[in-house]
Length: 201
Length: 86
Image (cartoon, rainbow over all chains, first blue to last red; front, side, top):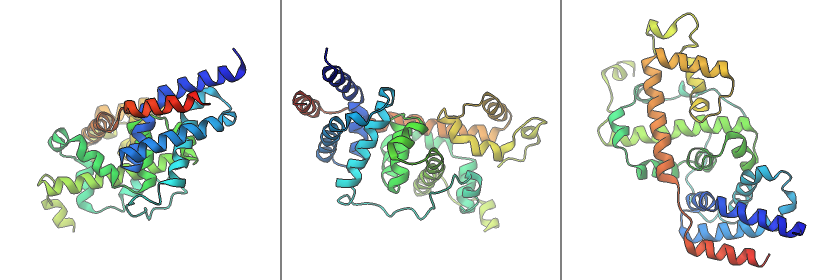
């Protein structure tokens, strides 16, 4: 087998193994099946032309996700209807406790004592809708880690950011997600204001 | 989050440290054995943090179940044709 054939065999296998998570991520990023398919096809083409930049074959997964993410940023992000970007600073690994301390009392009470029954009955589609409404940086990080199963290091490589930024985005993104779910719970009558929160307010 | 005296035994890391380690632990990113042991020890003693962690774990499961998608056959065929030309 020639070197090119070996590389092509490796590449084809890598694409085959990551096809579902690539498509799933593309679908959540672009929000339409047709755009997701185009994004994956473009990613595969760009990846093959950049195969020499893959230094370590063990890192194929973060490498291909990085190309997918870059393609999305270049060609699709501006066209998509985007929720507002986060006002949070991203250059630190801010503590979760400090972040929670900036949240409303009613949300903190819910965060500390979540309504288990509400979560038991919560539809996956409602959770995914809440994720779709998150600002891009948090949405993408949560999708890569919590949906597609990348490690924090792989996600950092895929997104081209330091691992500390991924940790920070996870804390903040998950807090924003909890806040969105808290709002859903309130709307459903599960998380109304308590005596305690009224007194604190 | 919790002022129960049982959650703050001699070698307990306490709720604030547990909260900081929450997502790292649940996402399998806590690698230091001592940190894992301390976190799990706290979870064993603090009902509030344990309850919080269970909900986060449930949320993780739901996200994985609901968020993953299978690539359509059309796309697989398209990509195979693309790769045939490489």
